[in-house]
Amino acid sequence: MCVGLPMRIESRSGHLAECSGPEGFARVDLALVPEAQVGDYVLVFLGAARRLIDALEARQIADALAALSAVMSGTSDAGALDRAFADLDREPQLPPHLAAALAAGRTEA
Image 1 (spheres, one colour):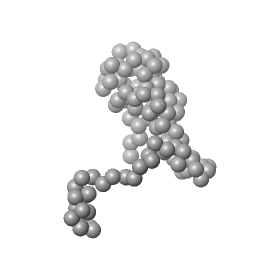
Image 2: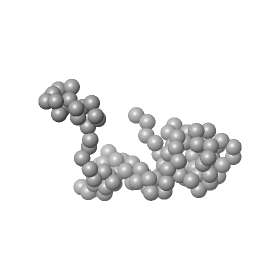
Image 3: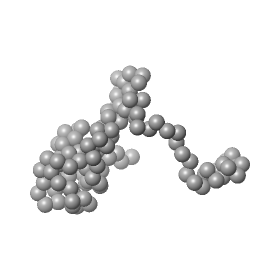
């Protein structure tokens, strides 16, 4: 599984940038987001920025990753996941084709 990390661009030279994030500093390829500037936040997968994100989304992603890490290490409290995923205050929605099948009375895929 590939997980995107939120990172802040600290400096850049051409299509490479020095970025800071929850895991520390990293050199990041900006070829897919050439409009990115120093101070911007990017979502980084495998050393390459895939898209620009705002500071709020960067914080939410970092909080969610920290909560998952705490759960996996056994150090989280009971409300850690609820707090980290507070933006998910809705019921999951079925994709349209499954919603149509359910409405038609199908109980298996």
